[in-house]
Length: 268
Image (spheres, rainbow, N blue to C red):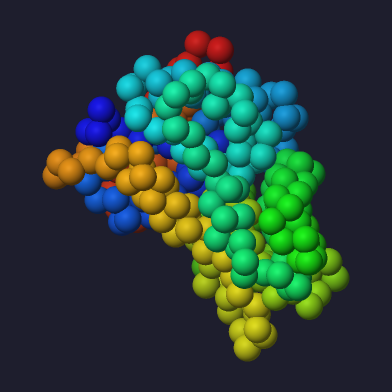
């Protein structure tokens, strides 16, 4: 059981930032990754449709005998977590939201927290709800930033357009005078430095979500005695729609050469 893989899924390849962070934090763990590239981005889909996607992908990861499932997508975490938990039954399920809330707990009282993410994530108001539950004195300001994920997927990170889009979003009055900025999308760690450069000497703490999520999962697996002590970890990467450009982008997201395999799920 301990040598069984950790299953990770996302609407595309943004979740590979979490897979990469997990690889660094837990180098002995086998990983199976599924990117639903056929239906990205989830951020523009209805809650019901996202839940259907989550259901089918979870069944696929269970068929691969995964010992834990990671929803490496804020949109899916926001509206599909309960769906995944129900299907997974006794298999531990981790989402991309709870680790961030846990990390912010006791840090952000009387502070202003900005949250940027997809439309689905922001419309769910999950961050505002969870943060204020834990820290009633905190003020939460949320902003949908729908252009960022596709821009990152298309590889425009080092282009002028990237700086323009980031500046346009972060200069929004909703994010004025924030103390923390939560990157509520698994794509956004790839533009962490660009966001940091925007704030420059302003005293804004940018929350590095991929590292926090990986550390949280490591702690929970250790607590449940599920860590793998074998060496030579194996990694498998599946997508619902293969293209050469996606494989190239996936290599960039995971930060090493990987091979994607297309898998057609029955109802996906």
